[in-house]
Length: 294
Image 1: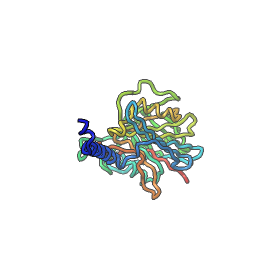
Image 2: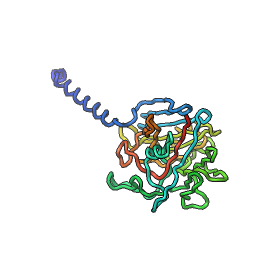
Image 3: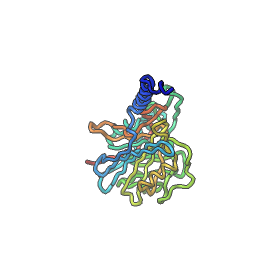
Image 4: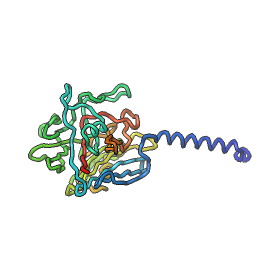
């Protein structure tokens, strides 16, 4: 036994196994953000953070913090389209960024119709008609009402002066985007948030005086890379970055964060996973975009 362990064939086999393992991991990581933490300035007053955790499970989170005192930021919710069968044409978050010229974008509200039976049997495709599930407005044009009266919550409102409020509409509706649920209210994490189910997540928050806008996307459904986050973990992450109010947007295969590259095209900052295919963006109904003036 000792002779066999000391033989070159044994160590050759061990080396071969290690090469296969490392090679498989490298191939699996191709096209995904590196699994190590980083922090850098995207624009003046706009900082990107990549957080990596391994316990209690793997989680890679992407956080953008916009300092409105430093950055000249304004906001956009996807406008409606003239399309039969819905109120908007489904677009990926990258397509939204490139079409409307924003510098940063995340996916928005949930929407219908939607299904995902397989990589070839799904809806919507790019350009298909869809409607946001909640309340939605762009430049004062209300194009989804959530099928509820009074106006449904949770909803983020953006005034003409680019002030952000949750569930408190201004006198005249300008931009509005609804989400899945509130995560933080008045500096306190909402009680009874789920703390067991892991999924990709998208969220938006603001600090107490509205100076800082916080965008979060957590990758998920990707073994050995990132399992996702619970709603409780998502709320705790936002609170760590100073959020006083925060709302979860649509998650799962919709979760995507993009920024404008040097050539004006979209650069995907996370690892979306539509139809369980890493790197594949899902076309969605609406988005939250940020203009950053140079």
